[in-house]
Length: 110
Image: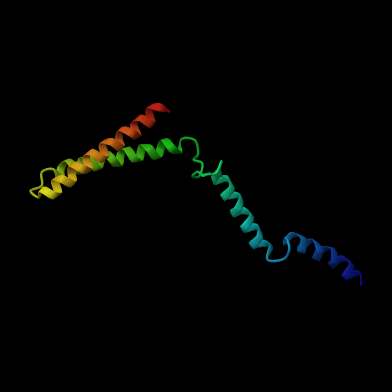
């Protein structure tokens, strides 16, 4: 009888933690997922994860380096004998030049 008196409150507490039944671990995972989703949705719009200070600048710097390397490769492709390759290289140069300008403008505006 004494064991039943000890076990009863523990059982009640465990059932309360289940929020209506079910696995409490699964419920905790669902709650954590809902909290993450709520943090990403602000004012009805989905936003990305919040970057740590300086993380955006590091990403932008990597993007700039990538676009600069792509420009070097695209300029080399202008020497191709194939007119389609030259056309694609010209498009790539235009695109990477525009993207580099946007990235550098972001850097300057920080």
